[in-house]
Amino acid sequence: MFKISDQPIDPAALQHQLRDPRAGACATFEGWVRNRNDGQAVEALDYEAYAPLAEKEGARILGEAREKFSVLNAICVHRIGSLQLGDLAVWVGVIAEHRGDAFGACRYIIDEAKARVPIWKKEHYADGGTVWINCATRGSAAGGTPP
Amino acid sequence: MFKISDQPIDPAALQHQLRDPRAGACATFEGWVRNRNDGQAVEALDYEAYAPLAEKEGARILGEAREKFSVLNAICVHRIGSLQLGDLAVWVGVIAEHRGDAFGACRYIIDEAKARVPIWKKEHYADGGTVWINCATRGSAAGGTPP
Amino acid sequence: MTKTIHVQYFAILREQRGLAQEKLTTATATAAEFYDELRGRHGFTLEAGRLRVAVNDEFVPWGAPLREGDRLVFIPPVAGG
Amino acid sequence: MTKTIHVQYFAILREQRGLAQEKLTTATATAAEFYDELRGRHGFTLEAGRLRVAVNDEFVPWGAPLREGDRLVFIPPVAGG
Image (tube, each protein chain N blue to C red):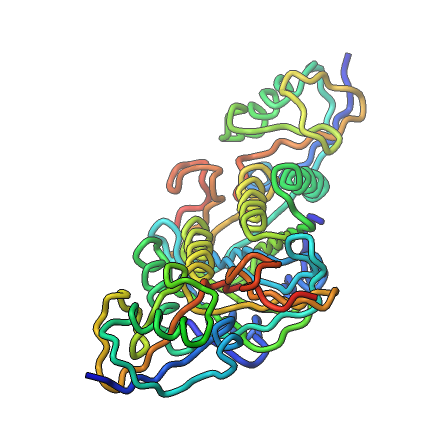
């Protein structure tokens, strides 16, 4: 399951969905809003998604992970909206019989999701500026609002 | 922190200890008691540790992980005692600024812990037999109690 | 022959356009030509080479032909997580 | 010269010995010689080559000399997780 959520993510509930007597390994990844990026003091983040395509592309990525690794189940949920420092932005959980597959698939899913799923991140800095990450280098005309 | 625990592991409490505004990534690994091993139906497990040396060796492993990866914090707790199917046997959590370090260190810690930390596992099978895992091949005189 | 196209904007494109979606008529034949037309009209800073495009909620090549009633999304570089 | 050694057993060694710890006197000089002596006496199936040994809660080489009052643990192959 790959889901875009405008509500806070509940990792315990998601991991509970993954319980399976065949599983010996559960690998999870959490992306948190951190207080710095590229040397800038970050105060908050906005995440925005093109949800219908994001969920389709996310489901494709989960399918690829199942082909590449021996996985019993995998879930990824990405938060959208306004997030504060320390907030959980994305959660990935994978269960497998063995840990190599659980780690490999978990890493594959987050790497591909960050590269391919249409989700955008706008950083708000302590100096008042904002940048849409990846859309342009900070300070260029395309990048956002200079402080 | 590397700890041997004779009480159930509480992942939410452990992960809460890892919260840090500098962290952008949290990778966790959970080892669960699964219902099969090498084609045998497993009913329960006993874990036994030589605790003082296990905690020393575990602390060394966490130190190595910090040298090899850019890690902000890492925790590993291993359960001992009698466990049932689905129970959590070991929990590893690592936080870092970036996900590559979090994944790398988490994997390193569980791999080294399984290879080096003096913890032993006895499997109880549906057919009534038991085996100390790794101590001997199943069925040999050294391996445990035949069914 | 002109067609009516529904366009949805996200992230930096939404801010540069000042709205999240609009209905437009165009005489262009492909997604690429249509984006160039919009770029000229709205002053988008991103070149097509940095974007992907989706028609009716599926990624398509830039050369995909436009059809009456298509829903288009131009997709800036993503930054999930 | 004999010394008194405290030995603790885990896992398969504990089961084969039938107890978790004991105090023994030995005339052997090293951990390796002491294990061979115990193996003969208690019928341990594991060869020393498959074990590690710790003295006073630290891993040591098999050739480590024994001293009066040492606490020894023979460590079967581990299987954490």
